[in-house]
Image (cartoon, rainbow over all chains, first blue to last red; front, side, top):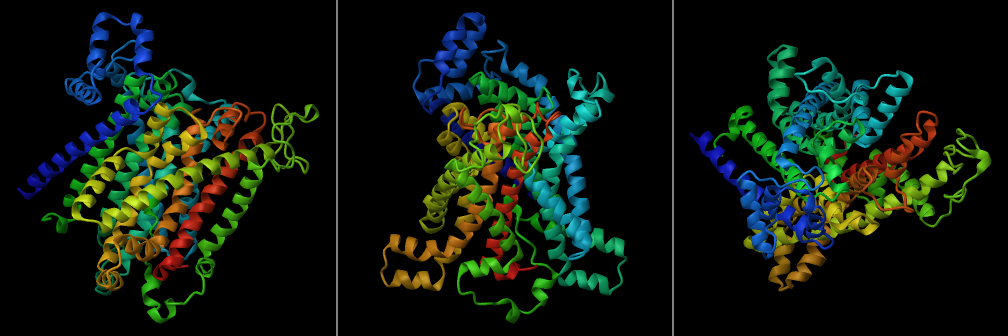
Length: 320
Length: 302
């Protein structure tokens, strides 16, 4: 019951946050000087169908004061109208429908790699503080945090295509269900590149949390009463460090959604990031607005999921 | 990415005994120099800043845009320590200039984020419940948009230039300063010396700027250093995507992007600017960790 209540409360605060996010996006993209909404609609208007123009009018709230424009946009969003792309002359929801799965697949694979790297090296270095294993872990974390994914990605692409003449991304992207083998080859390399930075952040958190826990009294007691090494490491140390690790993974998943933007560009993946960049370059405002909102919504929802995960991991937080 | 850097209060830290840990430092710089992270950070950041400032004032081994027809795509040598590109330009000179541009944008954006964010954070911690609630809600909402996306959205609206890039990168980092500064201010508000000041009838602004601000300066300094490293990465990312300042201004990210097609025949054109980005980021990260060690003696683990 308390769990249910806390879910309801969180969901409400998510709605409030999303409302605020939409206001901020509206202010940034529509009210700042230099935006070319009306001009661009005017230019491409002749190329759109009547129905598309009507839905875009509703989306923008053309000819209304700013506040009403906002609510017109909100109403359009809630009724499933994400606008019409001025460049592709298609509804934005269609464009997103085809690119979202790519980004989600990339994010999922990256997260698996990132958590494996982070928890693996983090535990390894925390269990040998001050020894060479720790130095290896620290080096991985410093390098992982400092080398931007676009440099790593560029280097990998150059190496693969010139030294090994192997570049699966040069073929048109295929879905997971049409050609799983090629699809995995196309996803796995960008995922590796992205996962290093994420893994480094998770590594630092894991190491810090495990080190902190292992200094506490209960850990000494467990060792003293003769708990096996394996049970000590995983049940006593890792389980207690898990909340911190999950928090960090959640934060990183949010950043990851932004990180895909650059990596999709390098590996030519037709995901949300590539859609966003081409929209920015073409000043295709409906697409920019909707894609940004969806990324932000994803981030907010992930954070809520992380909050809820606490209750599952740590019984002490259930009755807050 | 970098707000997770609270180093562990490790096994050794707590068992060493407090007497050994508490050391009086004459200046903050000595405190910084005492930590290994701090020393590494100071040295790297010092070199990076000098190189960048020289780049800004065009004091480079060769004029950055000069094209030497007899030295096209030459590898690394004593004359060209990072080689030359397809027009015979010296990569090292170009990189110094690019570093200058990157640092300009990074410092400007952190100035925006640090000034606004710290001010809002102090207000949220010190002023009444309502002000605090409004500021925190607003910062939570800003926080919900990943900073790099925010930067992309702002660049879309404002268009690319040095100032616009700085605003785009800085604004997204404001909520982090708000959060980091507000916590300590909340604690300070109830501390004895601030209460004493209130009893003595000091004005609010005097309490804020003479008493509270100096006490949170350490926290802000740590965050500034980490924000700088993030800003360099973010700027490089933006200009890699072609959303940086327009030519002839060229930042490091743009150099990486331009040389990626060249890298298969001349790897050094990619290596130079990439290496400088990584070194600068590592430097500011170490400096941030060092500043934290200096501000809080308990975390001195190494």
